[in-house]
Amino acid sequence: MKTAGCGVVAPLMMKTIQILMTVVALVALASCVNPPVTRAIPVAPSAAQYQLASMAQGDGGPQIVPAMLPERPMLVATTGPAIRAASYLLLDARTGQHLAGRSFETARAVASTQKLVTALVVLDAGNLDKMVRVQASDVAVEPTRLGVRPGEVYSRRQLLYAFLVKSCNDIANVLARDNAGSISAFAAKMNAKARSLGCTNTNFRNPHGLTVSGQHSTARDMARVAMAAYRNGVIRDAVKRKYYTFHRADGRSVTLENTNELLGRMPECNGMKTGYTVASGRCLISSASSGGREVILVQLGTKTKYIWDDARLMMSWGLGRLKSRGGVAMAWLGN
Image (cartoon, rainbow, N blue to C red; front, side, top):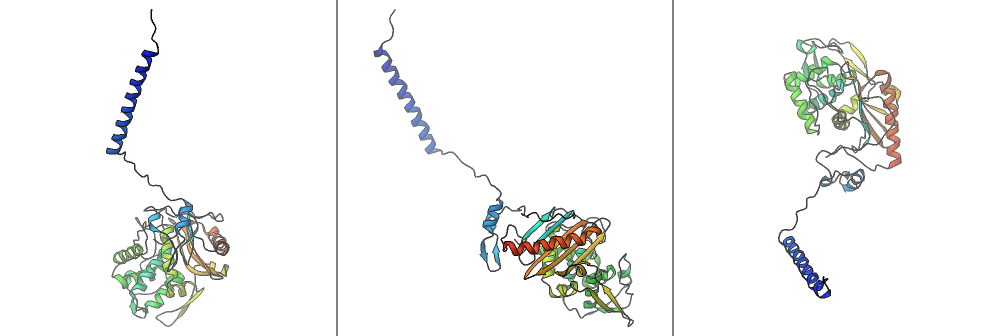
């Protein structure tokens, strides 16, 4: 039996190499004619990207670069001291920078804190010295009332100050009906105002915040409202007052005490708005300033025994954090 020698193997190896080279050449040619398609996978920006984006400077200070953000970014907030609100958001009142928060996109009832929206709509109409006559339908509301009577006449300014200081639901009705003709028409104006401020998960049904089906907002949306209210001189002047003297139509005067107890407990506090219903729990929007630094805190769904101390603790922490970190932003309310 004969075995294959070198003379037989060499030609076979050469033939195999030629075939392999031909296959490689054909694959390369196919790749040139129909190159493979690659698809970019979108990735949400990291916290570091938020920091880099916020370093671009604009006329109003640091601004987010829109191209770097997803359509609905999850806003970043650091961890502050422990407070007991179901939802809350603390922010820099000057820039909208988030300092701390929890569940601030969760929809829930916000009670009388929505009266800040009522005030903004009334102020959009202007003419605060216009006299307004109270109607019977205005006073058919509970539980917090100033006790104005049908037929009495007051200026819009008087009513607005009493409304913001003492949170009177009958005055809310007077202002709403005077402004839009009916409660439902005024609620539509409230919702339009909220949308203009960038609120995306808010629906109002009345001017005072008493519980009704379908009415809700979020801590983030109410923070947007609070930013607008904080920049309004009339609202700022009203909500910072511990007391307001209301002159009744019959000549008597009554001294109204602000429902915001922080005004007597925290020297840095300069106002904002309280709220409470059984459905919403205790709610509070508060603001404070110190040394050129300003913060706004929205607390929703907590208890009376905690809310004042929690607000003071969180806002004091926020003022200190702004001082120590020099305003480096991680997230913003603005678009």
